[in-house]
Length: 479
Ligand code: C2O
Ligand code: CU
Image: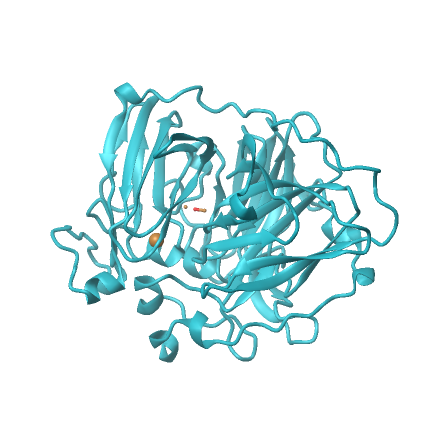
């Protein structure tokens, strides 16, 4: 707790970056296995346990982590659209856990929310997740039990649902961006559950990695088209990412196809939980290198990896023509805003507000039995774990829900809705894509709407996991 007084990003040294020779990097490192090896009753066994990761590079001591099948990101799971995902979670940890399938429009009983949709899976126990993947796209799975610690220690992985017909790309590459707060010896810093993180920006780590590598080199060939699947798995950090001298053509957001669009100034702003699929056409000359950059939260950029062009001849004579959009997923055809159930869900609380005397005003806290200091954030006036207490709202199946999310705090939030994708309204109308997690900046209001077509009890919460744990969570019911 000695470290709680100071924001980590301002006081800890940034990781030293190394340049890897392109020659040493094999393409196989990026190949995605189609299926896991271990099979039981057709279930892919996934063990939550411990592992090691070289987060600080090959020359430094590795970090003991928590991981699925010993690795973080966990194994990339892959199914075709309409096929079943069958995963047997085996808990080799010393504490309970569960898996949440982030962004999947799945049956409620498979959503992996402790006490809301299932009981926690105790140490030594297992749980079978089995559901049809309705949408093609880039999804991820992560612990939803004490997730502020379990995710920070590495319990997450990627789930790819392939389109029914092959998409015209040369290669498919997963890039999980995350940050890690490490102690001097390289261990995961044990500063979990502290007030400073909960009340401020959440647990921000001082090491930023791509696929848990200190500095990732992505080999490409000139005029190759790569589908880059970017996932932000960090606890709390919003990444603003760009690839130098490359056009970022966004093909899908949060797993759902969108009209192809270019990222403004090439900048991709991803909150925890957000995904984006890019088609990256490699236009540079053989032998070129281009930096993969993120903002460092202080106005400069940090190089966290690079695109390394093969020195050999181009893959093809010219770049491919502009891509067609990805095929549509079976999302609800339209929002019925005229008949919508409307609700204001203010985002309240946090440290700076209280220090500035804003306080929590008349927001009735109901954090019974939970230390008051752990419940410092609220949704619509209620501070909740997201499964205790009454629902935020209940609607009949098929009803359109329109939520207004005014952020009355000093920090951005990443509001995530389970089991549904939503549209976002801005000053120029409804944005042309679907999201499951939306950034709400301080002093701003985001308006979202979705068709509540998936029956069950669903969470809505901030995906800054310390905020979630400290009260910025609720649930709603679709009956
Ligand atoms: Cu990705 Cu409720 O979380
Ligand atoms: Cu938040």
